[in-house]
Image 1 (tube, rainbow, N blue to C red):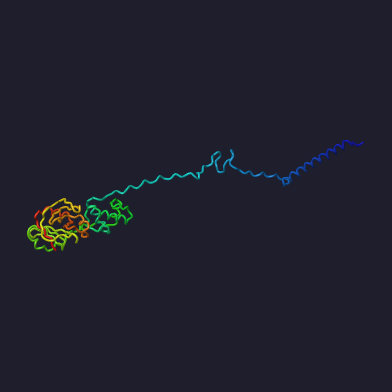
Image 2 (image 1 turned 45 degrees about the vertical axis):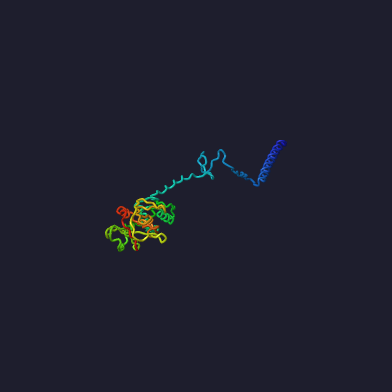
Length: 298
């Protein structure tokens, strides 16, 4: 007699096991189709980083070290402090100065055409204008004062003046004296040679260059005598200095003229006999006495 119950139970168990395996395979197949891949694991979605997290390390940085600071775009880089201003040039010569250095300045200016007169050693208006002209041509401030910059520039453009350039000769050949000059103490003044000769008994003691009045204020001609001497005279008519004045005809006198010394024969007097060598006229003033003869002639 067969054991139907036992065989049937084992068969049922096999059938149930097969059914379970089939359901598992179907579930696996269905899951793979949903992912679009059969039997492959779905890759993880990429993560977009919006900034480092607490435990993230920036690339290239040591573990735990903060990222290097970058300069702000608006932060200004400190600049070097400005250089101190250059010192102002020192003034060496200016209006009113009188010295051998001024004479050299004038001689050097004359070498390059900025001073058209004989050096006098006196820093007057003519010298101021000459220095301004020189400064303007070289792009320097036109102050008229000779400062260190102006002086150095002038030295570089000129040579050391000779003795003749510093003190040009002022003596012209003395004309043949007029017959009226041959006796006594006489100031013998020739308009032709433009010279004055101080003569005693026909002998020439000293001579010097002179200039005369213009055609509108001519120097009188004739024989006169010195009637008044004034060492520090100032003209009451023209308000101009007339040092070492020796008056011989009204307001006309022999005297020193700084204008003659500076401008030469480019100017004229108001009738006086101008002398441009101050040393010579000072010596003459000391020798001439009231009553000495004055002869002015052609």
